[in-house]
Image 1 (tube, helix red, strand yellow):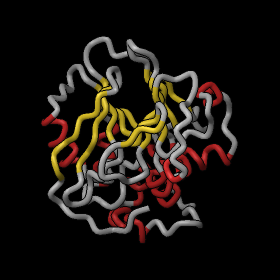
Image 2 (cartoon, one colour):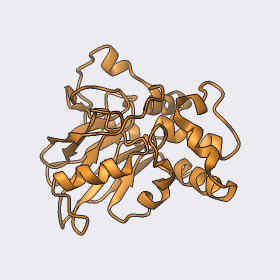
Image 3 (cartoon, helix red, strand yellow):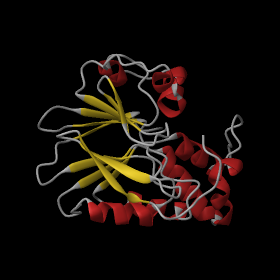
Image 4 (cartoon, one colour):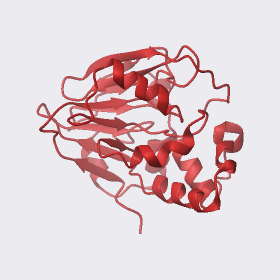
Length: 238
């Protein structure tokens, strides 16, 4: 039985909470960026908006990061492609290997299975409590204009929107999502973070050369740019 699609996280009473854009297997660059923002793993927490793997050279470290008590993640479309591939049921509509998934071929069958099961069990959305109100996290887009609808079972179409949609950004749709303080997405690659209504898009390409990770502090909703990434990962982007 799959876990619930929405996971609620209680307020951090010891430190700060940050969300970060798509990681894409560049965990060393992420760790370096965390150092520049003064992240304290004893008190602070980090929330990934999905796409932990593919493209970057360190995707095989994903289990190590997901085991960290201060690191939380939702599922992105690349995580979805990876778990489908790893568990022997490749997604037929996208060539995972062409889009940065070839790293999985170098992983043993047992570890592939563990990676697949772990990524499969990531929620599609999170709701993180802060002193200023709850903040929602979904990889690509929220299927609804009212966050309360995320608490009900999702249709297959709504799940697809959570993982794949670029509609909100493509249409410049600025209607706020009701009953949530803010919603944070990755997926749509940008030079700088953008805001539509109360919806933040923070994937600023931390994985290619001269991209950077963008963090958002969940209580203040303050954006913080990490340093430029010096590695280059030329795989195609979707």
